[in-house]
Image (cartoon, rainbow, N blue to C red; front, side, top):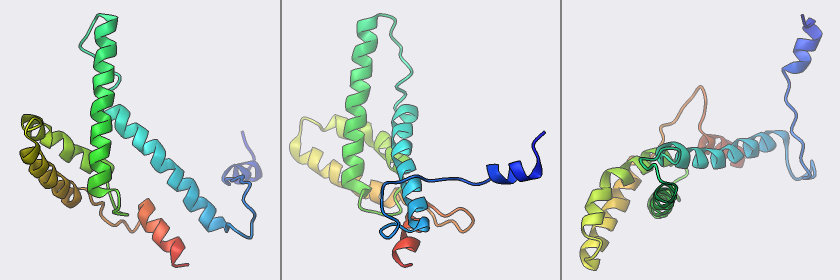
Length: 153
């Protein structure tokens, strides 16, 4: 059984950095720590929504080919997210990826028709932009809300 004093010591968290304390305040360090988590969320998006751990194949070469195809699809999806919503501070990559997947059949049908493809991609980017916004949260602010708070502090 832990003493009350030991439990109290376990409640704290320590961040270690090589940035001088005059250049990075404590609150800013915590925001940067949370921003790092955004990179983890990108990999999580790729793994979960890209279904990298699933395969219909039994033959090793087929499984490898399927994995490469999924990676290519994820790169195309990410490129569309970069073009469609990356500049939005309140973007939701999960919502944007959902839009990309919903539109996949449309742009695949016109992939060999450059003008039609350009039009479909233009419409897709607009749809991504509209659908990929996070809502504001009061209790647990999103990263973009925390970053806004640091820049105004």
